[in-house]
Length: 258
Image (tube, rainbow, N blue to C red; front, top):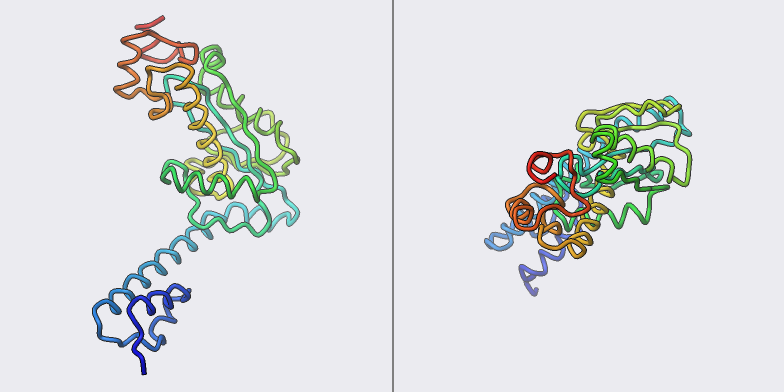
């Protein structure tokens, strides 16, 4: 009988979805080092996938708690990006996930690499019930402070939603003007799938916006630093001063460039 190649076995292992199925595979006891390495690799992959699934269950708990009290609840996750940069707007996103959602691997957008963020951003936008963006400009940040401007961006995101939520899960903020129930979660983008989804959509949107600003206002390296005070950004400030999207109320701009 023709002996299967190591690649044949690797291909078969990709069809296995549970670690418990590995030991029942007919080639599990094949002594070839390549085969044993393939089984170890697949086991690690499946264990990692199971960890992500378990994490998703944990991150869905706030949503499940709400649905236990109201099975028809429309839950909106809200998060923002861009509170700390020296330039550019603060951007908020509001997201209502689809029923039966299963975005395994979703997390705080800062914990994901750019490729994973962009992939999830595309998948979310194609499948969620509703999503929207709200921004507050650098001028508005200067006029009202970053905390109030962040709330303004969140309100604007909510206003742009195509459907009306009945519950809100918000990352570390309280929005006093909301009439429906809300929960403020510290580090909510790592605790709630709804907030994590909003975090991803907001970050991808803002990063892309800062790339556009880099072309409009070259010399600050906005496409790489997203407006944060990196060495290249500070060098650009020293060489050519401020541009229209800089935040005049933020240091060192406030004391050195106004």
